[in-house]
Image 1 (cartoon, rainbow, N blue to C red):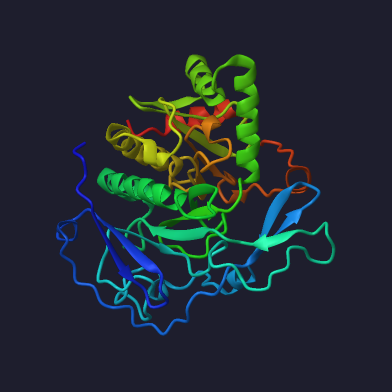
Image 2 (cartoon, rainbow, N blue to C red):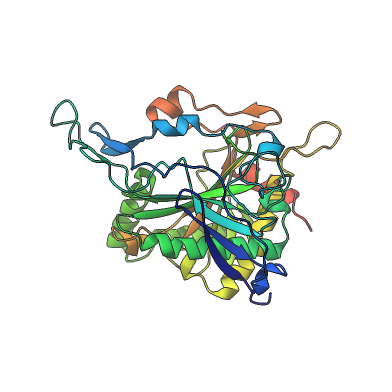
Length: 378
């Protein structure tokens, strides 16, 4: 794949946020576009919310009641992620068209500045609280409301990867951010509030619980063996073979041996890299091809009687190295999983999973992998 020509362009929104374009198609990639101004009457974003420490687990819980009023499944002609002019209301993107865009989330879980007068504790010294400082962005993968990430051409996925890498590097450098998380929620079963194909990027002010657990286990493994845990996991999956679904020049996709979700795929680069920003151009090219194939297979995983495929609801989560703490133990990988356990059947996280964190799988990783190989494009 030829190195993409991407024109990076910014413009202000009415409330002071920045809209960032990643243009890959003519005439946009040549720096020529016809954009309007954001004419909405928007108040400036308020200060950050708060987060409180759960003393029983040592985990931070963020509290963002303003998010309860965000848009919920608006009709297509009121979509805030389509270009302004296509619908009946002004959108977040005041332009006639776009390729890939990113902008600060107006309903952010983490933002700045810190609120004034926030006490360090609430109702006693045990109950620590802090401002929920950090950063949250929305990334739209296409202006086509009816598309999906997997339906886009490989060239557009390559642009999305470039945008993820760009934003990872930029948000890593923001004050107070400890971890950058790029992810996509897709499908009503996952809980999306907007149907337009998009993802999000969180800049957390702390190390998230799952990341801390994985990195502490990786550190313990390296202290004992002198090797990297995920390096050895990828090598062991390749040797075992039965859970591998794709093995390309730079990437390996497999169903993990202890998969807990009805459909679960891990995707790791063959080379140990900390984050998306550290990928070479060749690794990014290969990722675009492999990722499209994974998403297309996911949409062929379940089939109704009569042969109609069921678009898979999923969460696609990029696990990246944190900014500072335990960064040396991290290794980039993607976890894509779905709560759908059959056509029109959802796996609900009930007592064992929700209360105890102890998962019970309704299938086996080997069966998941076999099905994902069965629905390969070629």
